[in-house]
Length: 279
Image (tube, rainbow, N blue to C red; front, top):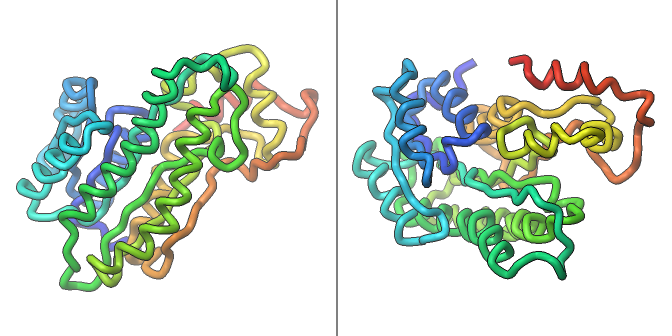
């Protein structure tokens, strides 16, 4: 099936991380052109792109996502290089590894976490909107935020992260109404991962008992891989698959909910780790 993504220009923030790399590969496989963002890992991202077979269709840009002027400059660089940006994915994120109650979290950590996860998404959306123009083929532009189940259920010890991701709900539900003022067929959605095997989460997942605790609220007893998230974003970004889908939140978390589904005896941690590593 033609997903109508060939030669579309896709701007991805946080492209040097696990989900970001999976997003780049997944869109590249569909023939898209890529504007890939990184902050401090820009040199690593350039090496990653240079080793790919789609390097001629990719541009690397650097910006601190907490700086609106820097994000705008990165978006402008992509627009100058490719002529326009059709699809934007606000993926850059930061998850503090240490558990800390609200009265224990430092003010600096609170500001940093919200600055990257919420304001970084705001500045990315703002820069994307500024360059938007209707596509002549009426296939519509697309903006997708990467949220988290922490924003839906909360996460003890990470109120800063939970708060930032919960704020994305307001962005989705407002910007779906604003994007059509720039592009009548534009769409805004969010993909909300649960626990996903990436570098950011690996240390926590390696702690004894974490996988059992996480998986017992999931009917589907497995962890997400980065490519699972990327393929969900791909579906929401595709004019062929989701031309009439806007303002929606797609949760990719194995059916996670607040109720315990399984006992420890029901969960094979070794098998779950093995499936998570498989591509």
